[in-house]
Image (cartoon, rainbow over all chains, first blue to last red; front, top):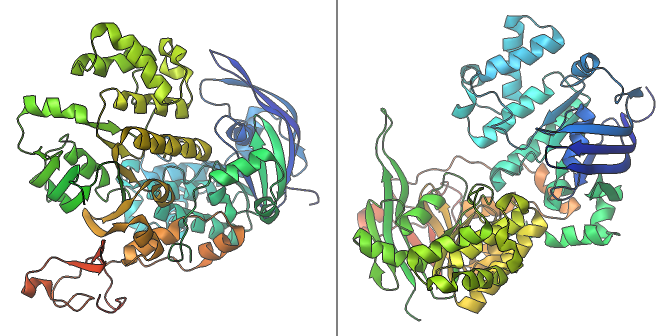
Length: 270
Length: 320
């Protein structure tokens, strides 16, 4: 296959809620190549999460969304796709990990049931195979004693473990693109480092493209090849991550970089 | 040294046994002081007991042992009426600016409430004081007629801070006050807290898991692990020459905004988290605390101390 995995052109998204109509995404264009990790950095309300949801064709909660432009996935236009076709793609070819691992899991279903559900629906696995695959996946994301933990419910896992479970579910169908929207924002620094290491490892092992969305430049620094900076629904700066850090061009990018708190001192940064 | 504003000695919180589970020592023998106008940063992972410690200091959580003295007054044995009068000296700023403001009350009503409860200003001056408070946190006084949902996360946190300031407190426990905010908003709130400290001489206990933020805020830093303080010193001492392996582990996990360095850091093997309890025999510093009856605490240099607990055997340094 030729061309990028994802080719987005002049994408616009208008979000309509009960209260207001927001032009959340104002004509952005970008590519994500296979095996590539691309960061989207910006503050709340800049349109980064809406962009991600648009790729999955999900509307923000309690809102409807009007879209314009083009989103081509391996050359196939997604914006005109029917819900049935989209459901087939979602989770299977493009998967997503959200910020809050508690609300993205079903609290009354065991982890195993939630994982098997996905595997049976998308890959047509038998009950037994889906369970075996789920144990394998939990092991892969570093959940200790997965054969025993698989029947546990979401509340029995810590925040970091729940995020690992979500990642396991997201990669279960070997997607070509994983979208991670603030995957570590709710977590401690040590757990954050574990989750970032896990994402890095999975990407390398499986040759999966990664779209990493965050407000924190520190999080994207070691994780992505290229970065897009978003402000008020537009991409205001785009480039290789090393260039953007070393020579930020846009005043907004500079402001975001300056805001990252730093640990000075010899003992701190090793 | 001046008289400390807050003095905590051997503070412990024990959560009783529940449904067959053994009792949990959430906070164990915490001791520290905070001088007037100073900030102590309290860092550690979730579950380390930071929040419980903050609540126990404010007497929102019963301590099982120990002493908490604020402005020379012992709080743990105070009667409730007296304690209520002490509450205007100590306030709380919480993490979530979305759930800590009543959605059906205007900003003006939210800020008037503590003024009415503590009767710090006469009724005819409340409106004036509310305007003053909004100005203090750099918000437009005209905002008092509006509701919380009309504000951004950063603005709401300013309102929460204004509410804490309403009663002219001397001491504020800030529990993860910026962790729900964007980085640029975090920097603004940190700057606000610092300027208020200078202007009003406030003391803060600043609880956070983000070590970089604490570095900007704190004069002294205490690192908590499993309910205990494992290291304490000036911010420069703890950050520039961390002594405890747990402190080093926390520092190593902070992402650095430098792609080359951060890439290299993420590729290192993950740290070994199997901390040993260090029970029995000599500690890593070569002292048998059980036999000598001494606390598990070693002074590295004046003002900088470290516990030998949770120190993996074999990873020790020379006796301090």
